[in-house]
Image (cartoon, rainbow, N blue to C red):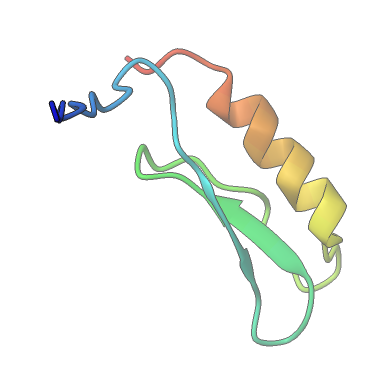
Length: 63
């Protein structure tokens, strides 16, 4: 039996934002590059809005 090990190559070309729930309700996304959704108490994002914003950001090429 032959086993092969698969090497995982990190994707350094794109951004990898994370969507998180805010303590006071609503959702936000943030990325290690410093990008993030607006964190306003007045304009709370739904999960869908935060997720779509994170997807759009992840499609951009990292510097």
